[in-house]
Amino acid sequence: MTADSTLGHESRSGAIEFRLAIPADAEGIAQLYDDVYFGSYPIAECTDPTLIRRILAADEHIWVIALDGDLVVGASVGRPEPANHTYELCRAAVRREYSGRGNFAVMFDMTIDAAKARPDCQLIYGYARSERARQLFSRVSYRISWVGADGGQHMFLGDREEHLIGVCVNPDRSATRVLPPSSIVRPASLVEREIEALAAESVEGEYPAVLTPGGAAAFTHRSEHGRIWYSVFAPSRTAFISDIEAAIAADARALVWEVLDGFPMAPGPIEHATVYVLADKLELIAELCTAAGDPKRRFTVRGYLPAWYKDGEGRYDCVVLTARTDDRLTARNGLEPLIDQIESSFSEEFR
View (cartoon, rainbow, N blue to C red):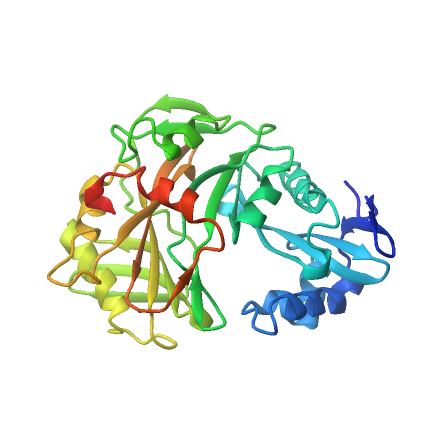
């Protein structure tokens, strides 16, 4: 697909045009996110025209936009994670007055098509902010499996929003999923059915010794319990724990709560934390889900990511765990029934 690939759909002023963004679109893209999110969108990569222009010029992201004349009315981004051969389908926005007026599934299809054509793409994942967004995802030509939720990771106008997590395997790239020896997913549950819908070859095999998938991190904390790597997204007061080194599960739990309690230096308070754990590390998962006298001082299983972590030729399942220490309201934007089914897909001791 080239930069001039377009598709048309009738709009109020003529035809909505869908194409890959170019540096000259930077101002219009920034204005889109500013208008749609009432000036509160927290990611500078979508609101700073200079940064957007640089990203587009360097071809760092796949950025598909929808235009009504010269007005950017929608956008979708494919963000690569080369080390994991994964692409995130993210940062989607559509102007409210255009919602329901155009086939914006075209944006997602074009983003997925561009991602799956790249040699470093085995898995694509993304988030649905609302039931309307989930329905939009459902109209793309590739089956999205809804396997988790983020536990209210993002703040919007002072409250939290809980988003769905969806994944699909690139049918044009080989991906071998290694099954864990046992699973925390309940038989015949929604998540099990969604996993079975993935087009990945599944094999039995040993899992790596690592506890978590790793990845880029802004901070490292070391104590007598071991080491932990994490990043903080200050606008939403959230932390993502990318890697843990600890001799026993209790030490890993201690490290996590040292970070959440503000023991190391961090840019502001942390109210929400996410950690992915390899699916065979049941002792660690159980330890993190244990409340030590305080119901807020525990993680809960929020999702299951099949074929998530790449190591050599294999891809290994991971479990999504989140913790909340705040009392903010949480909006699910019509996703309540599906999130409830996802939660009930896991054993009660992990919820």
